Each structure stands twice: as structure tokens, then as C-alpha cells.
Length: 230
Image 1: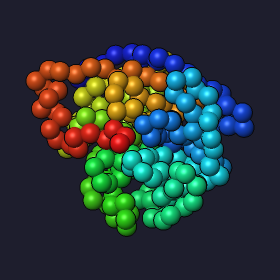
Image 2 (image 1 turned 30 degrees about the vertical axis):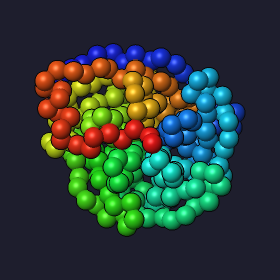
Image 3 (image 1 turned 60 degrees about the vertical axis):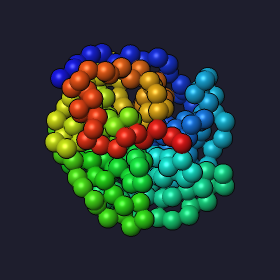
Image 4 (image 1 turned 180 degrees about the horizontal axis):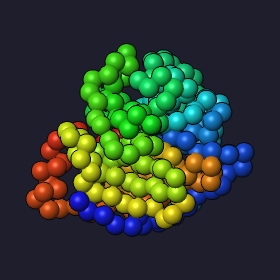
């Protein structure tokens, strides 16, 4: 297992009127994050807010290339990002104890925080398709180039973890500085992760390590090819 310190490239925020950063996603142009009573879009080039949507968001956020998906209490909402209109809702697998949310090749992936699980679900019905067991609290989920990563946060310790999507085995750990938490996670489809900072009101950018060994390539064959925004 690879273990290293997370390289924080940038910090955005805190933002006016934002007390908590929950779910985080990226639409290919803007970073979106949930802050309780609304969704916020910022420019990743400078961290400046560009727009908001009056949609409740209490946990994970995802983008499928056209729509936003947002965890709000015990439901997942499908949202038109242009108008903010809620187009559909499905039940969340954790019944309100859910955390991260990601989109990968036609399905949603949902973290269940204290249960230490990641569920793959049908985005039309909410039916659970498969479950991956983790060994730490799950606070954010993302797929990138066939790799499954999730955030953890317990006490003052927080990490980004790359795990085997078949077994849940931890393959790589990026350790955040003490006291710096991760409350949401998304990849930009390249070499950056966007991480929610919980009550700090910040969004942080963390460098994704490069991979290229034979073992890495074998790991990559297990899951979706990529979850990068389209």
C-alpha cells in the first residue's frame, strides 16, 4: 500500500453565508458544493462564486454530464443545473445516514458514513446494485480512470483512500494535515481532487498521484473506466 502526505494545491473560501461544505462535484467548468440550504458554483481558477441554486443539500453531490444529483436528508434529487428545478427524486440507500455521492458510467455511488460502506445504485429507482465494505467512515466518493477513491474523517484525522472496488482493500492513502477534514470529494478528471472542508467553509484542491506500474494497471481493470465529467 502506498502512503503519503496529501499535497494541497489551493484553498477556496470561506464563502459568505456558508457555514458548512457538504458534497462536492465538478461539471467540467465549475466546482459545485452543497451548503445546507443551497448549491454553490465556484470558478476553480480562482475560487470565486459564480452562481447559486436554492436547493437543499446535506451531503454528497454528483454530476452525470447533464444533471446534478444531490443528497438531501433521506432522498437523492436530480436537478437541472440551468434552472435549479428538481426533476426527480429517489430514496437514498442509507435513509439519511448517507455521505458521498458520485456518478460513474450510468450509475450512482453513495457513501454510507458510519456504516463504512459504498453502494452502487440505480439512478432511476434507488435500488442497490452492489455494496463495497470500507474500514473507515466514508465522507466522499469519486471514480477516476477506473480508480475508486473515498474520503475519510474520524476525529482530527482525514485521508483520501484509493481502494480495490472488488474487495475494499486499501491500496493508497493520502493523509491530510491534522485537523483538516474531508466532507466531500470529486475528481476533475485529471490530476486534481476537490475536497469539501466541512465547518471550515472551505473547498481544497489536492493533487492526485500519478500511477503507472503493472500492479496499478491491474487494479484499474476492476471498475468503471472513468468517472470524469463529460
